Length: 435
Image 1 (cartoon, rainbow, N blue to C red):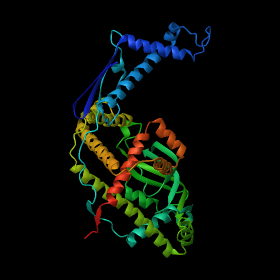
Image 2 (image 1 turned 30 degrees about the horizontal axis):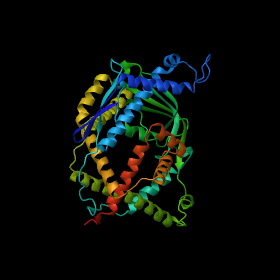
Image 3 (image 1 turned 90 degrees about the vertical axis):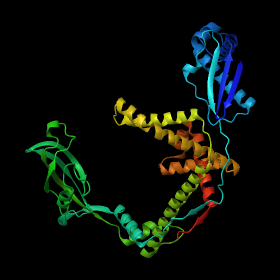
């Protein structure tokens, strides 16, 4: 195999190799012989299948394996002999791996290299905290949300539905006395306003409604009706209430018991304890958001101070990937090819800028991680997989299978490293109190 490496461009290595036809075919024959040892084919003893038969049955797959081995060999040899530090593996299309007319295997590909740059000052940066104390109004709001979330439905009875309740009933749209749309067993409250109905009228009409009552509201017939000629015309929204319900909030005793079970470190005995517990949780959440804000600000400051030439080939690949993702999303939403291409053209510059920012951040994070020996170990990976499983209410095994199947292990490690670097910047920064 003849190998050439061109490193005249700082951020890219151009690798070319050529395997003569006889050398390539020798490897193919060797691969077929090795494969024949494990093949069980009717009419032939194990290990005695003729090469012509093996060629017909397995030639294409063996040639693919031989091509891959030569690419890996050339890639590894180029890295070792030229002390290259790649930032990503090469991506080759099937067309680029075709044999030449004379049967030789000649491939040219580029490898984006990790550019050299100097890290600016990143220890002892300054930032001003924007953390604000938890106010009583926030505690009141959270407590009210808890009451609403834990409320239980009961029949409204003679009092009818209140503003926090709901009804179960059948809804229909009518035009000139003719029904043009209907749905049964709908759950409706003051916020679930049918399209084309005035929100205030709907809310006022629902409050106080009882079982078996009929409500009518003027409306503009919606655009989703099958009969296009009716869309936008005046109509009537009719609701036949099957059951009116009210929501009964939990008692103070229920809330004390419920939250007390989630706070083993501090027994909650009364509503003052409940409010103290809520205040602590709100403060923790606020502190976490503030930490993230500070970390982002510090990392942005470091990135702005870094001057580095990024590999153009990788930027182009990542820009294309972002635009293709946009196209897939638009296609899923029913957009036409013309609309997709127009959107790609419009957002290409922005996608390139985002790709450059992301790649620069990756290089800086890895450089700080290497300098400060912020390593990602197996325990870090296991904990992150557990966190992901908990957030998505699934098992760790399912998360592991997903990341393994989609080859996302390296991406997960980078995400963990970024968290470590961000935390390092914050913990080594001078965080000033707000004036």
